[in-house]
Picture 1 (spheres, rainbow, N blue to C red):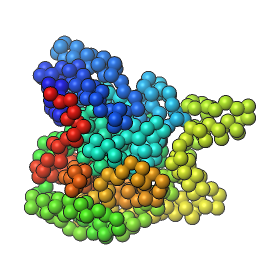
Picture 2: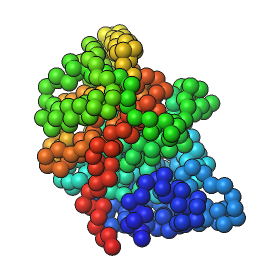
Picture 3: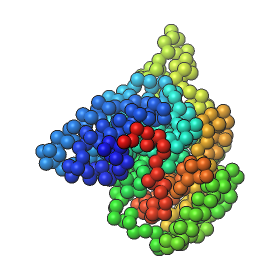
Picture 4: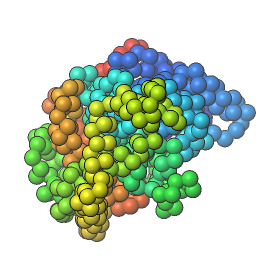
Length: 494
């Protein structure tokens, strides 16, 4: 029974709990038991919260017994990336500099999920301060891909993607700055949505690059993704970038299919070097399937997207160098004691930050320094404006844009960790939408010849999340990408 519960969708679990078919405690115990068997080998969680999960589930069951109305995510186990503040629960951002830190408050999205009666099962592993594309940059241990333990799950939200793929949680939240939800979703064969910038409050999200960071959902189906997005979207006065235009997704609208919609394909972007044959093949197969289902496929241009990686790796490190200046050993987090204040700063940051974080702080500090600001940071912002205009123009002739999430399937652990440029190039298809601030969705589109998942990407107009999920929902009818599970998720099944 417990393994049957872990295979159910979040939508089905919530309905079962509300209707009395299953108790929230039974659901929580099923997912906790699954994580007991798999999480250490995967490295998916930095901190699990089984006692709190059971207590929350029992409280939900007690309210149902009293006849109270339960929320949209009643009893659904949810995992949270470890850069999302959770009151009283360790929130380390995968960094030694925040080891043991327990926030005194909940992030906005955590408040919203509590109100929806979700059950939190733990904080997931991530690249330190969300800086990375493989979850190998965690200060504690790497996360492994559930489909092949010798490969990365992607990053920086790799723990959340792995937890959902391995059925350790029905849903999870991550953060996406340049692809950190979409890329691990593609590598792990699950859905990953980067909402429109401003659609989800960043209050309580530990900042990396403030003009880019967005919290986004992981799920195994389009409808589950919509449920989680609906629970967290909306205006929050505590975040000055939060936008009132955000609106919930209609589950009925997701069943309308793709007939009459226009998908724009940026052929120049697809021609980039290093794109694996299996990625191109799945893209062409999906394009034909969309066309057969009634969608119109047109070519569009994103002429400045080729500059996206260079632009991002000036803007994001510059903002990171500013945001991470607060970790100085004085107010909270790690402190290396020393009689001299300057030496304490140096020792604390030297020991507390990992190699990739130091690299980006140095890059960002240089880009902001006197004499270089105009040439680097300001110049990058100008190119960002051109990229945003490219998307606006392309989306005049198409309802959505359609292209891959990553140039390859998941690569081996250790394969790129010593080559920063090769690692950064993994984000060639995910960064442009982040710079433009538009919504982007990675959806499971099949598997490569070695059995590794392949994700494809839909990018829409601002606040058009519903359209992206509607198209992806149609694609679920064409294969088993949303129903197949990695072998590790079958272990111990009755």
